[in-house]
Image 1 (spheres, rainbow, N blue to C red):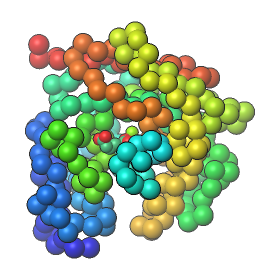
Image 2 (cartoon, rainbow, N blue to C red):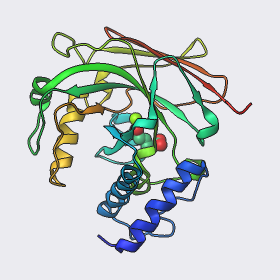
Image 3 (cartoon, rainbow, N blue to C red):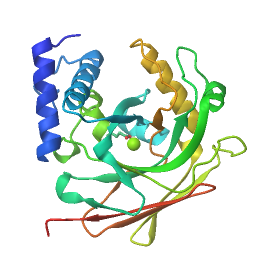
Length: 266
Ligand code: 0L1
Ligand code: MG
């Protein structure tokens, strides 16, 4: 680690304030170019601890940048992970208040809920499928706290991988008997198809994303407990949304998830 404990604590408050006050900030590596990967996760973990100390519940974990297209775009070979909060959870059909967000985008994802713990290293797709209680469709609303989306990977990790809101709905199903690689996804914005994808867009198989998360957490001495809700990363590109937009994502075998974006203060 290159940053002091005091700097990590200060950057965690800085980034969480950007989220809570809806004020975009410059990417933190501008002022801290020597920040390393451990520092980045330490800042994210401090944001998490600060939220929990105020009574926020962490209701799941997320993987980000799991699609080959996004990894290539950002010049990275490894996905990143973050956490999701109770106040980020939105019911299917929700109205999401854009006044509480900076510049939101939506991503269609496949979520897993575990019935058995997973502990790396060495977790593979077979282990994940055996440990999965059910899968369900989820749409992540990401909202980078960085001005004009100017960021690098370490800054994004520190900013809890742009996590903001998530919407679950559709139908929960066992993954057994579903070809998750070929599971088709269609995203519609205001009635028009804006993105299409198949499950294989996520690391070749969405369960691979859960396996990778378990193996990445093992390097921090952590495991995925039974009951963990995990969002495996966007199968589609992220689509920008604004007040007035209606999003519906249709998933083969899993039903659909919808939400509307509105400025509640208007
Ligand atoms: O969920 C994710 O894939 C993380 C995306 C982080 C970068 C962004 O805000 O686009
Ligand atoms: Mg995502």
